[in-house]
Every structure is written in C-alpha cells, then in structure tokens.
Length: 386
Image (cartoon, rainbow, N blue to C red; front, side, top):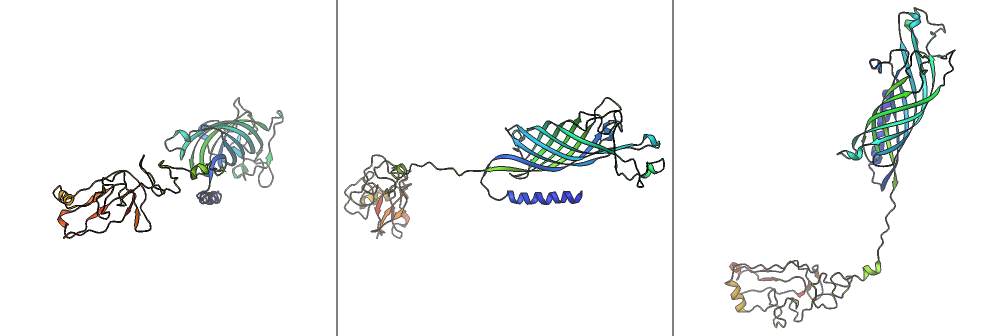
C-alpha cells in the first residue's frame, strides 16, 4: 500500500510540472479522476452500528469522469472495483461467521460544486453528490483450513483468511446485481489549473440484504467509504483571435485632424485650428523656433535670440525679468510631439511643457538657456552676458 501511494505522488508531481508549462487554454472540457478508498461493511454478520465502523476494511479503486455543466452542477460517471468483508468470531463454533465479496459498481452522480461561491475561488472548497448505479457482487466464505477441512473448535482460532468457498442460499436465489445509491460529502483543492485532489466520505445504500449471504433482519446492507482521488482536468485549446482591422482606415487615420495623415505627420496632437505645413507641424513664419499660434512677434529679426513667446531678447526685456524675480518657469500642459533630431540642426520638440529658466545670481557666469517645445525650432545658440 505504501508503494502504491508513493507511486501516485510521483505521478502527480510530474503532472504538476507539466501543468506549469505555458499553454494557450480556455474552457475545461472534463476531469478524469483515479484513486483508492477504504470500505467498511454493515450487514447481518455483526450488529449494524457505527461502533464497528472500519474495524474490518477492504480497499477499492475508483475511476471517474466528470463534466461541469454550470458553475454549480456537474455530472460524473464512475466505475469502482473493490472488496467488502466482515467477520465475527466466537468461542462457539456455530456462531463464527465471515464473508468477503469482490464487487464492481457502475454509476452516475450529480455533483454540486461550491468552488465558485467561496472566497478563495476554488483552491479549497466543499462539494456534495447524489447518484445511483448498479452493484454486482459475489460473496465467498473462509470455511476451510489450510488442509481443505472444515474448521473445528480448535482450528477456528488459526484461520488462514482465504475466502475460498462461494456462498449461496439454498432457499433463496437472490440477485447478485442490485441497485446502489451513494451520498457523498467531500472537499477538493486545485493544485494547478490541470491537477486537482479530492478527499471524501460516502454512504452507500444497497437494495439487497444478501451481500453477506445472510438475511437476519429487515434492514438492507450498506457500507461506508473514505477515499481520495487525483483528478486531471482536460481543457480545450484557444483558437487565436482574428483581429478585424480596417487597414485602409488605419493607414489614412489623422488623430489630430490637421489634414496630414498620421503616417506622414511629424508633429502629432497639433492643437485645433492651427495652420500646419506639409509635415503636420505648426507654421513658424519667422523661423525663430516658436510657432505662429503662440508667437507674440511674428516677424522677429534676430531669430537666434528669442524667449519662449518668440520675442526678441532686448535689453529692456532682460532688465524687466531681472527685477521681476530670480527665477521664472512657465509651463504649458499641452502635449505636442516626440523630440526628434532632423537635418539642418532642427529639432522636432514634444512640448509637454514650455519652460524658461533664468538664474539672476549666475547671470554673468552661466548660460541663458531657452527651451521651446512642441514645434520645429532652430536650436538656439548659447548666450553669454558681460
């Protein structure tokens, strides 16, 4: 048993590794589950009470396929192969009773899943199920010792537990295939998108009182099961989405509506109602680096020495700024275009802002730098004052 459990864990760890590979997956199609369970039988050999639960267990193996049909409901097909057994020992020879039966069960269950209704969204969640199926059995008894003789009052205490004798009833020809209804409560966890684990307990009611070849009361036989399964989820691969793009419309798009399509526009996001040239940049008539729509002196003569508003830097303008404040910073929050170097020492500025920096304390030692953005401009020369 330990070797089997170890083998299951090794296989599951390989599934975890495979499930972590990047894959294009979408909807879960169905889940395949496999695992062991322990069965405890309640029949007529001993008193049917819970104090005898799991004192004489037998193992079974289950295989199931589950299809999720909604967030709450799922349908499961299940096959189980295993054994049931019970023994009663007494000092009185005629009171010693035992049986063991191999069985096969095929059934269908309706499962209520609560993984979509918990806070952890399915990593660990309860579920319940109710189903019906066909249960086929064949009881056998340990009636003979190692020598093939019936047990006597001495040898009964040294049983070989080899259930070699088929059990039948001379007065009743009972059916060996009966209806079975299981009720199950369990918990499941998701180790990954593909691998899941489940642990559960089930009560299995049998529509027969002959599973142990005895009918001593009016109660049908039943058994309890404790089990766990490893489940692998099968998914459908995603089909790559086809992008529906109007390429003609895309190629002719003009985001800033300046009349120059974006593919040819070197000055994107031009303000509305501003005249532009063939490249989509605002007109700068006097080539001073300040476009006409913000230029306060359209026909500046000395185009190398202007402020951020296109005004020639005269002595009076500098004097006025000297006595106004030590530092001036004017910002305009309009975005215009990306800064790109071009030929003839021109700059295509992206002005997120227009700034004028002028430090009075370093007037005669530092450079006066004028930075004008958002238009084509001739790079201003460095100015020195003496």
